[in-house]
Length: 313
Image 1: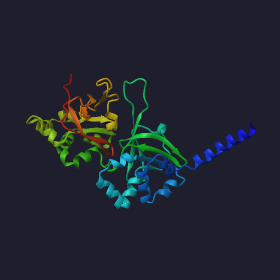
Image 2: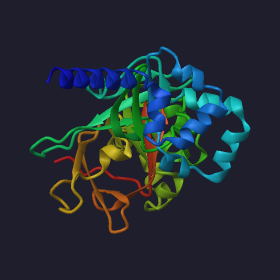
Image 3: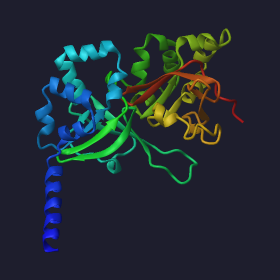
Image 4: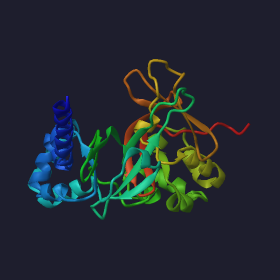
């Protein structure tokens, strides 16, 4: 009997010893992150991620890398400096477990030019309350808190590339040629400075083509009326960073019951659902055509139409 207990203790100690040798590189192998590991090796970062740390690695899955265009993959393979900067943008110099992450927290990565915006989304009006959906620059964390001896791995659904823009919302709109009318409307209001300096915000940005669909004379009238322009602009703004994952209905099998309802800065409310093609739509008529452009003070989604706020009651 005594011998049996000795064997059990030895087995336990051996298992602990083996687990203690599982650094981030070893753990990534165990998780099957073969593409990431190959890129880490190509960039010469294997020793870095095997060192003492601690690190948090936001690790794109193999499927995440597969979703990149062949041109981007080839660019990463041929440009070691770019590859290194992309990988560093996924690494934080401390251990970040899911319970310690805060909504709209901006964390510096090992790429000094790239921050990682953390978001935690909970569906509203749902009981019992499910675990939050966590994102890093809009990329969903699909496997949380994989602990290694020198840190932790958080598996994410997409590669964080292209990098987040350093410009704020107003600067990004200004520098995007297809959003020139929206920029004019922002400048015509009294809130453009607040949008630029405050936040984070989520902007649903109608391009010039969307403004051109309005009745003749509407845009000119809007730009001449500061109050009207302010209402329209702030109706397209939501407080906080709401990436696509945070806009999706909680339960798509029950349309209308678990839709996402979010208040606008203007004071109205937007309802987010999915259409028959799986596209996100607002108030069952405005389509979101491009999602998750990360900027310095939030995120921008492009929509197909200008949303006109309802009249004041």
